[in-house]
Image (cartoon, rainbow, N blue to C red):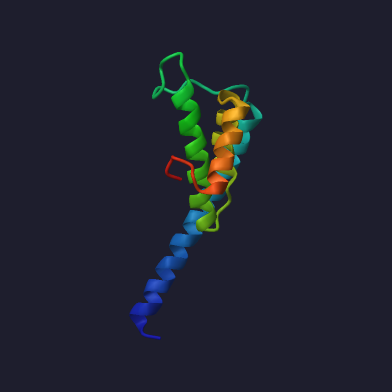
Length: 111
C-alpha cells in the first residue's frame, strides 16, 4: 500500500476514534440531563405560548439525530433528549399520525 494511502487511512481512523469519544461524552452528558428532566425547557426559538412549532421541530430533530448517528455507527443516546421534549409537548394523536406517515413514506418533513 502506498505511503499516502496509509497516512490517509490512519487520519480516518484517528478521526473516527475522536468522533466515538465525543459521542460517548455526549451520551454521558445527556444521561445526566435526562435524570433531572421534568418538562420541556424554554427554547428561545419558540418564545410564544403556542408550542406547536416547537413540538414539530423536536420531532424532526429526534428523527434526524437518530438517522445521522445510526448511519455513522455511533450511540444514539443524545437523541433521546429530543424524544423526551417532543413527547412532553406533542399530543399523542399527532405523534401516532406522524409515525404512521414516516412508515408509509408520506411524512411532509425532511428527515
